[in-house]
Length: 202
Ligand SMILES: [Fe+2]
Ligand SMILES: [Fe+2]
Image (cartoon, rainbow, N blue to C red; front, side, top):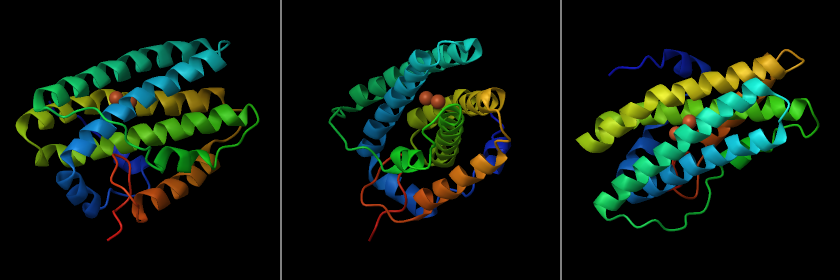
């Protein structure tokens, strides 16, 4: 199954650095555990939006479907971990999502616009990383990560279209703000390896 992710590559401000790919191959357990965390957090974010914005039916429908898919992905990662004897343990969060949220505005309706743009970026980056690393993994993980591309690229589109739909402003300048911040988080040195980390400090 091949999925066209050219729209995602065009949206993202930069490619994942090769040094992150190298680090991922050296930290297979952390990658799986943090991937499980990412899926769980993605479901949680969608549910939070559903509690906060009950007056927006399109958001409720899209986020409900998204949360279900993320929980399904979570179960799939857990099954692979179990098969491989990887124990789920606590891992600190990557700086990535919080680093993006520091740029978010706090009053409505801007708050929602910014959260949705951040959601689009996180989904796009996840998709890019799955595509980038899939060919380098064993056949089971490679097939799993390739199977995620379709849903993650749809999640990217859903977040972006909701941002356009509910914003009362031109969102292009806001997308630029978050893209700049995202590039910084992806390209600057990081302390620990995570699914969304930057290159590891030497
Ligand atoms: Fe997912
Ligand atoms: Fe997703």
